[in-house]
Length: 138
Image 1 (cartoon, rainbow, N blue to C red):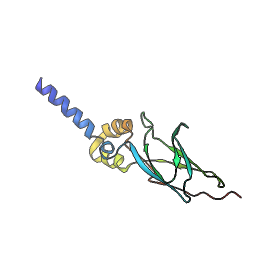
Image 2: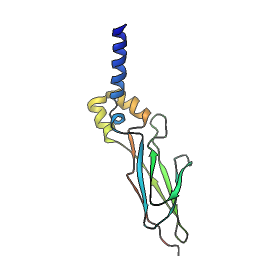
Image 3: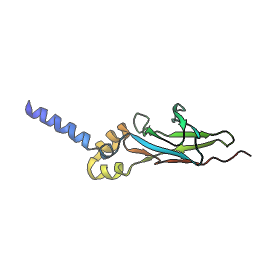
Image 4: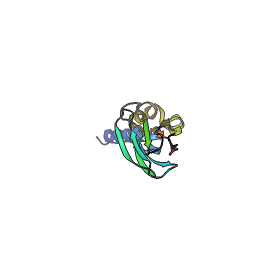
């Protein structure tokens, strides 16, 4: 019985540590949002069009890098507006971490590459920051 428990425990630990991006990254990220003007109104929408944040610049927000599910990265749209200025829309896009490729090839293997990292979403990261430039309406 002890051998069976030991094998089971080792298998679980190996599966958890086998996915390099999951070990090295979290599935959320803090992103600073700045603008060329003070107190610009911003609204952030996820890839399904649901509002996840409303506020003003400058601010810092914590966003999820994955939408949940298998190979399902998150993407956000930032809508910035201020009276007397043109509304600006920009995207906070997702990218695949180098840890996902290199770490799983060197250490994690197929378990990390095809199962754990895609399910946790830890293989993705978002743009590091958002800089908004609003221009006066003519």
